[in-house]
Image (cartoon, rainbow over all chains, first blue to last red):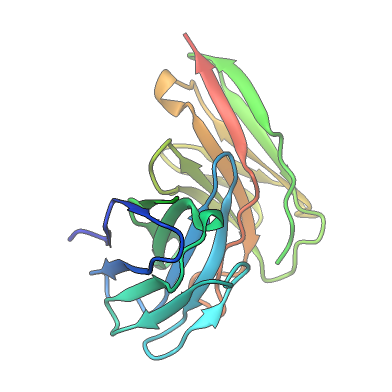
Length: 110
Length: 113
């Protein structure tokens, strides 16, 4: 039982490049979330998916797209990366009383 | 979602009890109060959750007064490994379909030898 897993752990992009961050959970949870965390700041919600087949915008959705591929997987795509998207990205999935977070993806956009 | 206010940082020494207070004046009737801990380069980790009065688990206690406009996380006898950022969050239950967490900047706790 791995909980929430994310790939890759690290990524460096050039401005304008695209990439997809992958997240998977093996806890059979309905909801999944993507957050970003800038240095010294709290987490900010980008997008979430309350159930398979649905997605909704969070606080900071601009520049991102998401896909809830199935119940297990929720991906985050940057179509044209910008330096302002340099951050650590966390995927999460809530259980009965708490959110379970993945280990994060550290993304640098040059 | 109710906004929370907590101290930016706190210092303590090993073996002391640490109390971190969070203000949430606009808490709604259905809102729970949840605390998370985050170490550098890791995702946040759930510590404790409560609705009213006092909740205790093996890690911490959470005190919530009757008006629920604030809460206090109590960490007994802290150790160096408790150095982390602590987030206070207020929102509905994970069991609700609209559930989502809004994080503030948290409290940076530094435990000194």
